[in-house]
Image (cartoon, rainbow, N blue to C red):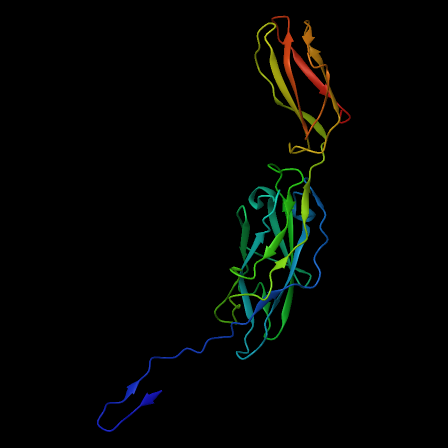
Length: 275
């Protein structure tokens, strides 16, 4: 743009940038995967569970360009017994319109996770949309039984970004997208001594603790059966004031004030319906 006047030099404006559309949004696909128990043994990509669906929409208003999605942010829903994402989630898989698509190694924090698409990874055509499904599998260890896993894409501070060569996202989406509630299910397969001394004196009281755990050592808090404690090796007598049978509570039981009457090495064994 130029302006002139008699007796004045011509002046010009700086270059004015015409921005691409900033109207792309994330919405719900209309249905979410049914919330189910996720077994603590689902720790491999082939066993990943679909937990969230959302739609990315380009309204195709003026620029004639696609939305080239770069960064996605998924947050957890804050609630009682919400699982820490970094402790619970071992990995993430993504499908776009039913087809697997590559993403960067997710950056998983306690309350949210982010991942990046390549330039050609997730491209939403001008005036079109893409349906995205998110799958997760669990860490092998560090899981807490019955903790909840519910995910969302926020409407405000959503954290989604697009490549500047195409259309961009609106700053605020109409609505947040929320998954159903999933929960971690740990099914015990064995007992484990979690606290036991290596040395005790003759007739010196000692305590020991047992847990019901899965194959990876995660505690099954729903296990509540009787546990029987007995002497496995040794020539002395083991005294158990509370009795050899104790009820498990929240996947744990403690034997207190046990004594052994001979100065020698000995070992104990515990059994239940798990063996």
